Amino acid sequence: MAFLEALLVKPGPPAPVPPELAAVEGFEKLYTLLAAFKEAAFRFSNGEFHHPLPMTGATAGYLKTLQSNLRHLAWQCHSVASGDLAQRVDFMGELSEAFNLMVEGLVRQNETIRQKQNELSRVTKELWLEIKKKEEMETALRASEEMYRQKSLRDPLTGLYNRGYFFESASREVENMKRRPGDSCCVVMMDIDHFKKFNDTHGHLCGDQAIRLVAETVNQILRKGDIFARYGGEEFALLLAGTDLERGAVIAERIRVAVSKQPSPAKSDPRPITLSLGLAGVEAGRLNPMVPGSRILLDALAAADAALYAAKEHGRNLVRINRDWQWGKEEGAAKDEHWLAD
Image 1 (cartoon, rainbow, N blue to C red):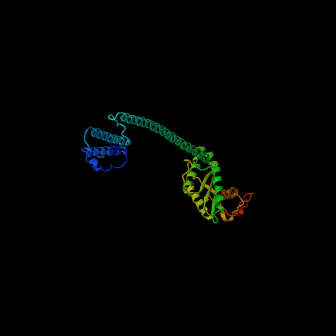
Image 2 (image 1 turned 90 degrees about the vertical axis):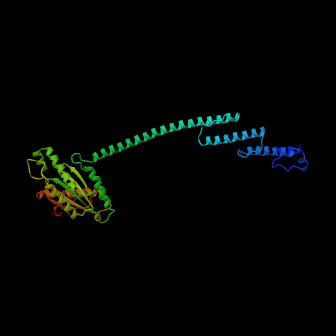
Image 3 (image 1 turned 60 degrees about the vertical axis):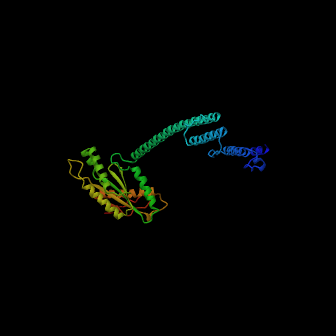
């Protein structure tokens, strides 16, 4: 009995049957059967459910049923872990109840997660729509602000920049020239000849057409980077960027000729609209860095304006150049006519 008790109690593989016990009829068979039961119990305790059970009888049948049930339960656990929450166990009593409660809890948790995910998806979609709506409103607002900004910078009759924008952007261009030695630009003032008489004779609507005609014609000649504006009434201002005085005179003459070739907006008066133009050049190398670009621009505009009036005095429909004006002096440009030339 002590030998059999040692087999069941002590860990490790079974000991060899002593000769004196092997001689007892049926002892070795009983010992082998008990050793097989011990081995099955050991493997079950380690979670091994596929080990063959080399035994027969009712008790062996119970063990084999338990092994089969545990093996099936392990398979169902794998199925649940893979997402199959339809698995249920009805063949292992309390273990079945515990397994089924676990799966039902997982089902409830899964449903809660699904509802939370749906809620999160809904909130995310609403948030995305709100963000998109806000972005669209911001885009519309920026477009509206830009539209009103452009309107504030534009002359409503011609669509050209207005006097304020011209002075701001042209002053900035002159200021930037201080950092570009060798650069130059031309300031041009132009005025429609006999405009008051034309306006009084043919009416303000026809006068507006004449102003638009000049604006459109000049715009077709200018380059990107040139700054063209309606300065006031029938007077226009132009800054030709990166252009010396001689090249500026060529462009001014091209403008004069192009306008004079346009048909008159007054049907009853075939005489063309003409322009008088005055130019003043600005050279970066002659700029005083201590004098602001806005001050230099004012003097250049005064010099170009003086040349414009010289063109008017010499018969109109002419280009005149101011070649020797005072560069950026606080008292403004000189008025002597000797620095006016054809």
